[in-house]
Amino acid sequence: MTTTDNSARIAILGIFVADVAFLAPRLPKIGETIAGSGFAMGPGGKGSNQAVAAARAGGAVTFISKIGRDTFGDMALAAWAREGVTARAPQSDAAPTGAAFIYVNDQTGENAVIVYPGAAATLSPADVDEAAAVIEAARVFVTQLEQPVAAAQRGLEIARRAGVTTIFNPAPAEPVPEAIYGLCDYIVPNETEAAALTGLPVDTLDDARRVGDALLARGVGTALITLGGRGALFHNRDRSIHLPALSAGTVIDTTGAGDAFVGGFAAALARGEDPVAAARFGGAVAGIAVTRRGTAPAMPTRAEVDALLAKA
Image 1 (spheres, helix red, strand yellow):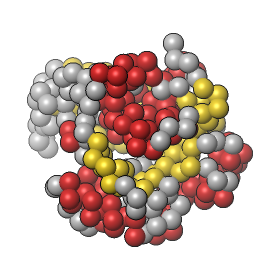
Image 2 (tube, rainbow, N blue to C red):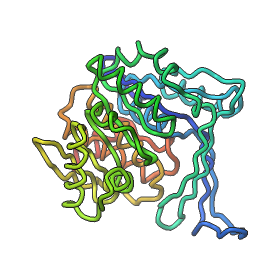
Image 3 (cartoon, rainbow, N blue to C red):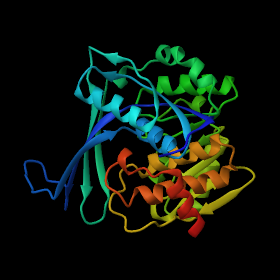
């Protein structure tokens, strides 16, 4: 069982979806049917995955969202209760809980995803205002872009006014108001998202540093760019450090790797670790998660992460 540090309070705004995952050698063409090699359904959604990752890593997590009053909503409530995540997620009678189609290549573990946010697509700044006390009481606030960007921005504004450390995971990539960048203590894009935000390639480590500089110029405190199998780049005005990926075994499913990284990073920051050490911890969380099937179910415990770091 994971031991929770109640002083390491984390508020996460995002969505829950039911992941419907199919294993196959490739995606079918339009009009084509192919045979799959596996199937699973379980809890997902970037924000919810990050909440589970942070909770298993020892954080005291409150998750802010909306879900439907339906079977998938029941799945969400059961998953959060099982993981020790406090849910602030009203149930809607007007909209269903979200769902995601996930294709996983059964040879490489690479994935493609279609997300329908469902009730969480109606999250508004007013909804976030109602959760302001939760955000203000946290040490770290995290949000992404699967819910409306206006809700994400309001959460970041509330956290910044309260002196709460902010982490923005701009995923899936989309244009965001320039004002958001100045609200980010940490922005955590992957290579694709970093390129989409800046219009710059991220083919090499030097490219990643140039992208980091572009994000800093927009007002970000630190750019933490995840680079898949190449690890991550921690980049700010004082330090630019490449953190190699940590291997915990054979990679079988990269779905949720970014969420694992963000959740682990948030948990380590919330308990007061140095930001570079926290990023290394997040990398270890992701390194373990990709050796398991699924998203939230693949997240490791803090003991597992500490064991991997001790061997690194």
